[in-house]
Image 1 (cartoon, chains in turn purple, blue):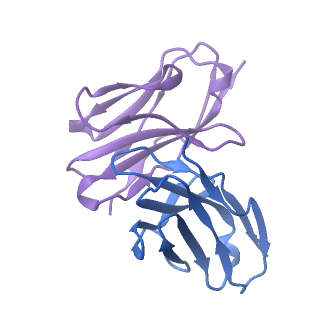
Image 2: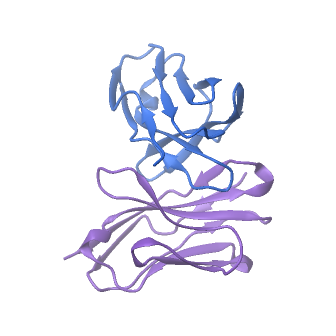
Amino acid sequence: AQSVSQHNHHVILSEAASLELGCNYSYGGTVNLFWYVQYPGQHLQLLLKYFSGDPLVKGIKGFEAEFIKSKFSFNLRKPSVQWSDTAEYFCAVILKAAGNKLTFGGGTRVLVKP
Amino acid sequence: DVKVTQSSRYLVKRTGEKVFLECVQDMDHENMFWYRQDPGLGLRLIYFSYDVKMKEKGDIPEGYSVSREKKERFSLILESASTNQTSMYLCASREQNEKLFFGSGTQLSVL
């Protein structure tokens, strides 16, 4: 069965620190990859997505992610976080061969200290 | 902008009750999904549907069923609610190769 792993459940860092959240998926084949964010009390929002082309994807709010096919990874990065980046972040994967099933990772809670 | 509406924000039910969670989207999307969100487990797919009257099991379908009689509406049914079904339930819809649009969620408590 397909699975998506996010290595860190909780991350605490100070403003202006750099952030990197890991995401690995467990299968080969063509994939579509997503990062979603959920701010406290709000809906899930799409940060960025990768379907094809340049493996370095830029999203909203200064986030980017890099797809490394050989490592089955899609790590999320932001060079300098702000207090407002406090949220839960979810990686999600669609395996094209499995149709439209979107599988989420377990999430990473990020707390940015002011 | 796409709107995905879940009929209830909070629900409290008793063990053994039949529970209906309703979801409506207004963008004529073919694909609709039901997830539950639990701390530390992320979002887990219960069922999804890629067309009217079509449904597919997700990762945790046990104890749930779904109904999609009209394209815009996708219902999640708990035939006999149990305490381990206490969770936040999220409905979503999407068109092919597009992002997922989520509803605001239904926090279900089963006592």
